[in-house]
Structure formats: C-alpha cells, structure tokens
Image 1: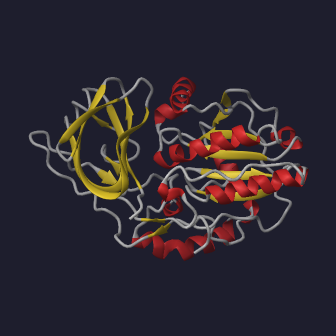
Image 2 (image 1 turned 90 degrees about the vertical axis):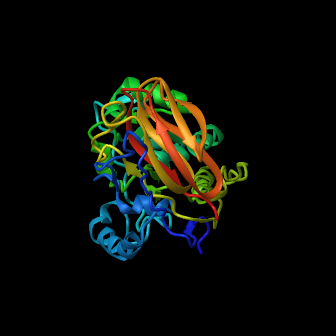
Length: 356
C-alpha cells in the first residue's frame, strides 16, 4: 500500500439507520443521504468514505479523468487514492479572477505570487467536515514555511448558501483559527478553472507557476509536506527544513487503515434544503458508525445532544458552521439524538472515518 493511503478496513459503511424519536418523528420521510452535484464520489473515496458501488466506479472515473482532465495534468492517474505529480511541467496556474471577495490580504495575482516561491492553493468549504479536518495542516505549513518562500491561500468554494456571505465566512474562519488569505469563490469560477473534484482540493505550484502537486480529499499530509519541501529546496538546496508534521489523528498517518463511516445525511431531504427545528420536527435521531459525528448548523442557541443516553450541550452559533457532536478514539457504533433550538437550521449530519 502506498505511503499515506487511507485504506478502508473490513466493516463497511454504517447504515445510518433512522430511529423514530417520539413524538416528533425523527428525521422523517424527507431525509436523504448522498452527495450534492459538486461533491463527487472521489471526495468520499479520499476520506475513506465510500460505498461498494463507488469503489466499482473508480476505474471508470480514472478513465474519465484521463479523457477530460488533461488540461490539469490528470494523466489518468488515480489522483484521489494517490496524490499526483503532473504528467508535464508546463501547466500554468490559473490567475485569480477579478472581483473575488477576500478575507485577509488579497494577493496581486498568481504570477506575482509564484514569482517569489512556490504557492499552495487549497479549496475548502469552512462548514464541511473533510475541509475542516485539513485546515490545521494548512495553517501549520503556512507558519513553518512562509519565511522560506511558500505562499498559502485558501479558496472558500461554498456548498451552503450562508457560506458565500463574506461576513459569515470571516466569522466562521475566525472560529476555526484560520489566519490565511481566503478568497470567496461564490460562483465557483476558480473551482471550475482548477477542475476541482470535491472538498478539499489542493494544488501546489512551483516557483514560476508550474503545477507540481495535486491532491483531492483528505489524507497524504506527509507526502504533501514533502512535496512542499522539495519545491523549497529547488530554491535553496542547503536550507534547513523541519521534519514533516506528526499526524494529528490516528487516521491521518501514512498507511493508516480506516473504516468507512456512516454516509453523510441531509435531514432536510437534499443538500439544498435544511431541516428547520420547530417546523420539520424537534428532534433528529439516528444510529451511526464512525470516529465522530458532526452537524452543519445555522442559527443561535444551544444544541442538546444525546449520545447513547448521555446528554450534553453544544453551541449552535454565533456563526453558521460545523459543530462537533461527538468524537471517538476509533470506529464505533452509537445512538444520536440532536435537539436544536426552534428555528435553527441543520443542513447536514456528517461522520468521520475512524481506525479499527
């Protein structure tokens, strides 16, 4: 197994069984699982979140990328399970569209950015689980290598309506401790120019602006940091660089085996519509199997959370975003009841992969 792969161990995907939560009816008949049009199956494969059907479709997806993705240098490689060195060295960085809203300092342009050294461009959704799990690595690479010449920018490619609003994005990023320059790609123009395949999507550009490294999804943190160091050594072969970061979670380590969790749930019936407490019911209840459970919520107040009969509270606000409902040391089975204040919107329930 290639270093950094997150290989799904035996156990399969949790069923996400819905339980009736009397007297308010649990998630109800409109609840849905699945992904939205921008979130492709490869994003789930990268995070160790995949169904058998998605695994069977992987060869066809590779062939499609070989035929359709040449401009980004896909070259037909499996860029999700393995990170990618581009097939040629003259793929230039798309420039930053004019008119983007920025949180933090706005770069002059991609040519100007890469004239001073390599640049890392990371597409995220600040309220989406897979993206949030990558942000501590991104922040640390920025801290470690900024003085050596690395530039790091994030691109907020909104999945949820509130995540296109600069005030909400700024507040949400501040809660996460993100201090990088962040562009808000509200219309997904830059997303399309880069050929992103899901959240998160990472692109490393060398000094001068040629594509050096691509990775879609979570994982491959050590390999990505080694790619960054290789680019910096092209500028100064003798400079001292630190050892790559230690994994922040057991599932992040090179060669880690993870069990796919329960698939993401959209309790409002689709990714486009939230479940609204008080209008659609008062409780959400389900069984899940995962290393952790999370909710993307919009609204103020305290979320009442029950895990296996034990209650605790989680703040819903002030900014919309991802809230941690429970985290576990490994892949575990649990019962969840979520009781938000009236009027709070629940856009998504998502689950993290865990080690056996």
